[in-house]
Amino acid sequence: MSQKQKIICVLATLAFLFLFSDKAGAASFLPLPQIQIGVNNDADNPQQTATSLQILFLLTILSVAPAILIMMTSFTRIIVVLSFLRSALSTQQMPPNQVLIGLALFLTFFTMAPTWGQINDKALQPYLANKITQTVALERAMEPTRSFMFKQTREKDIALFIYLAKDDRPHSQKEVPTYVLIPAFIISELKTAFQIGFMIFIPFLVIDLIVASTLMSMGMMMLPPVMISLPLKIMLFILVDGWHLVVRSLILSFH
Image (tube, rainbow, N blue to C red; front, side, top):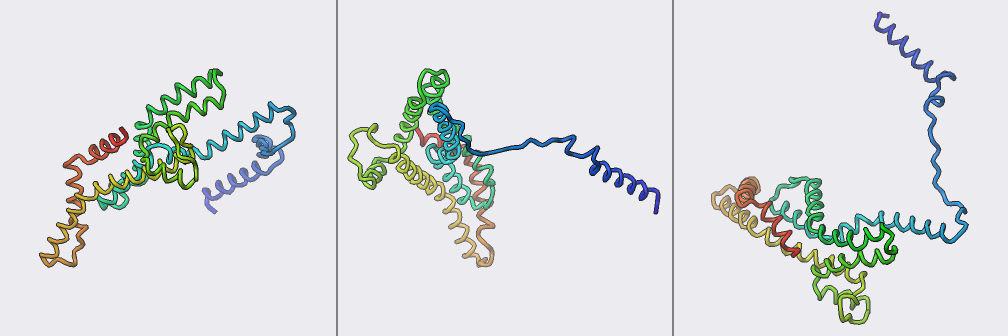
């Protein structure tokens, strides 16, 4: 056995004795905390019960926060349009999903900033200052959100869900229930996103048709048209400053 191997054996033996000896056990140096999750009977008065229910309600809100961000904001329209753009360019996974979702999130923050500013001024800050109750804060927070959704929702979509819910015909926006407004807003956003996506597809579809016809007329039927049309579509998108046009059109579509 060489000198190097002897040193390694000695070090391994010392490490073994250090880890498993009683005097240098890991438990004596790193006591691990005990974590318990459960429900007990310590709520002796209604105030404690109300506090527990508020905590459960807050946890429920946090669990559905992604759905609220996606379905009750401008995120749906933006991400659908960006997905249509990538499909029209035929760039497969470029830009990656992480980039598209990140861009969609920041554009959502930009378009929703005025609405969220009103929620902060009218609901959140007064509630944190103990000037209003939680119920009043929720009602005030829903007003700017409902106003934003009404501006982007078609009347026939609202009428559809009112008919399906068998509710009475509302005479004003205040009489439209929120559970009716939200699905109507979602399908309106999807329709608008598909309309914008269709307009994006047209110029790239023309390029695909021209390239396919040219290759067929030249007898190059074995050459995939995508290999020729892809750089042409990317060049056209760069020349017209496509990202600027798409983002500008998306932002202006909310005004």
